[in-house]
Amino acid sequence: MCKLEKEKLLLLELCRPIKYQSFEKINKMINFKKIDWDKFLEISKQQKIASYISISLESLNLISLLPSNVKDEFEKIKTDGELRISIFDDILCQVVTSLREINIDPIPMKGPIFYHLLYENNGLRLYYDLDFMIKKCDHKKVKMKMNEIGIFQGEINKETGEILQYSEEYIEEYLLHSKHAAEYIMKKENMIIFFDIHHSLFWPTESYKIDYEDLIDYSQKININDIDITRQSDIDVLLHTCIHSYWHSTKLYQVFEDNDLHLKQYQDIYLAIDAFKDTLDWKMFLERVDKLKMFIPAGVSLLQTEEVFGKILPDDVRNHFNTDEIKNLINAIYDPVSKKDDKPVAYWDIPLLFRIFDTDRASKLKLDKNIVEELNASSSWFKKKTYKV
Image (cartoon, rainbow, N blue to C red; front, side, top):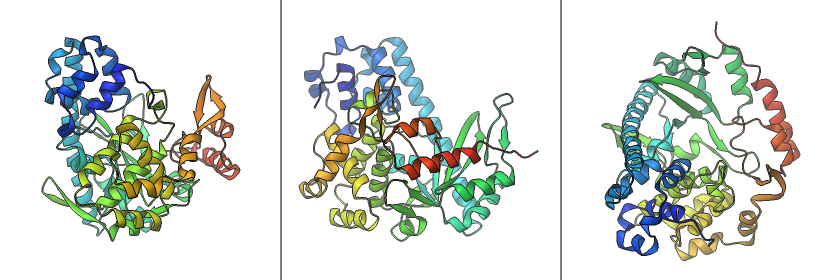
């Protein structure tokens, strides 16, 4: 394990589950008087875990050590985070209730589900969009119902702050090209909220593709605001944390560099393993991995999480994934040839297709030629946006 700066080392300790945190242990490792608290605050925000860290600081009575400006900022992050979660829960329930009126039972994913299952007893996890899985054939009905409740496909007009709705022609073209989702947007209490309405989870360079039908048969319920919400099973939640990390994956401990991977993704996996450790059937987990063809995403993400937080997997699960294929992938995630601003460029640093169309950057990476061509084709139609008059 490489040697981390004291601020980063403290951050790693404070993003563990609160029940495992110990002032005595941390005090032996780190001299708090030498911590640059402004730098610590900046890194925690950069890694998208400042809201969680605000709770950890309180629980360990470290808040009194902070300079007033840093203390005030963490308290503001906590207050804003609690408000955001409350608003998002309300919107989540509104969407689910509205879609059930037309006999569509969406499966929420990521943000609110991760929060209520993994974080609620530990701290805060902020999220900025809502993800749902539906059947592909239901997109048009979903669109009509979403529009009824003030959620549209479009973007924010930077001059007026209002939503510019895409034209019907553009929406049809988008769905025709998109292989995973339709994107929506709404304004709520001075907040801009984004929605991804998925009909599958996939990654173009991999063999896996997960549809609504793959999730619904294993689904469970979670109660949010007195509404029973259909959610992914515990096994599928853990798998989704792995997919999310893998999508953003870059070489370990480069999480502190300027890239699209954040410590939050590893924290999601760690907290999922901890939350389900007494109930999760690891044999069923491995069978699910094989059925959904997710050996690579699951293996890379789980093993990297252990490198961050230490051993947390059962030995047989670790051994199952500890193959030369996985090791080589982890070691090769950075392409040593391609560089941007004299820094290595991550092979996996292209997020979901149809999110980023930086084809010049893509062409410098060791991507399959067909993927680069598809990115080029995608950008050509995507940039020809048309709007409702």
